[in-house]
Length: 413
Image (cartoon, rainbow, N blue to C red; front, side, top):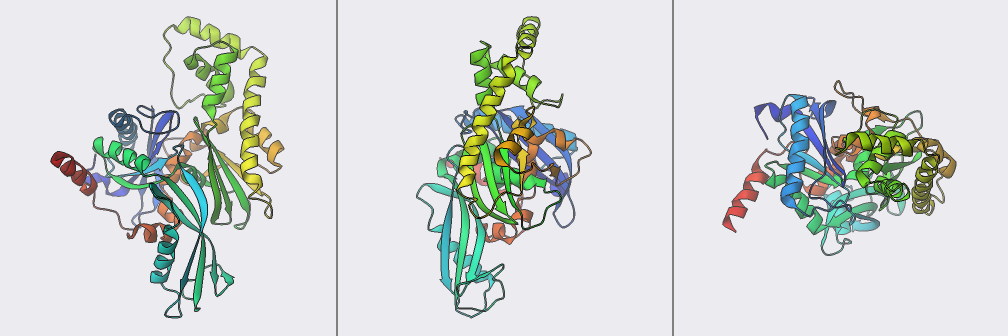
């Protein structure tokens, strides 16, 4: 998919259980995304309801279709993708690293050594997605940034996010099998968190990002610029669809249409559902939409999901009450959900402002693109830690090398 026009384009691909989302931005000379010029959304294939790839060929076809849609809109081709994962085996935990400072002054090599000492805490069979700093202590005194300071003992507290190595391998295989390159792989929940810009609060605020997806809900807690907790709840929009299907005796496809029609303020939906008998289907949907029980069914499941989110966050917020909440994902369009969130959490929901302008789409009306948008800024927002973590510079990788190696090895097997 690469050509000579790809040098100023960058792409994020969010691998969801329900849809695959691709967003392309045109970058500036210093390789920072400027504006979104294309996006593509296609139904997921070869991926189960836990966001785990079960068919490499089908998944690769879905990836290719979403990227092609975005490329057609952008008027150019991309050389590599930043992939967002949301599979059920993503885990997060805190880890501690401690090293002596031989030269007295903290250098880049010391930070790399500190990260190396922390990596040993991950389990066998896991792939490291993120290793993000929370706090630093130099000679037992907390410091914001240890670089250049003098001391004898450096201690770092990190937020670690991992997935199963097999999950990582499968998504790489699917992308490469589709003839595309992979630039980076990250957590979709953290990416969605980075897609929105906070409005009218200080840089030290404690915030909670809730990404309401189809199969699961991602949760990210931050204090200022530091992540201190993230989690994945296996509850999402598909559970609302299932409730509607069972209670109103509708086929799942019709129940999904009811949820989208009732729940979303926007007339533009991520994926249209094909209905075999359009007239009968429209009548069934209309009847359910007029049923007073529908509001109660949807509200009951929304409240259940939000109370589970609150359970996850409560233990992490003992000394830092929430200043505001960000909502992303397709579920954030559900009617009245902001009121439910503010009532349950006792904190205001911040109006989302996407980090990039777009001449081709109103992103505020498409919160389901948040993770794909956030992937564009991964290196910028995670700072030098992303580069240190992978022992790479911020310069772009030469396109094609990973794909060529993949098919070379495949031919030899």
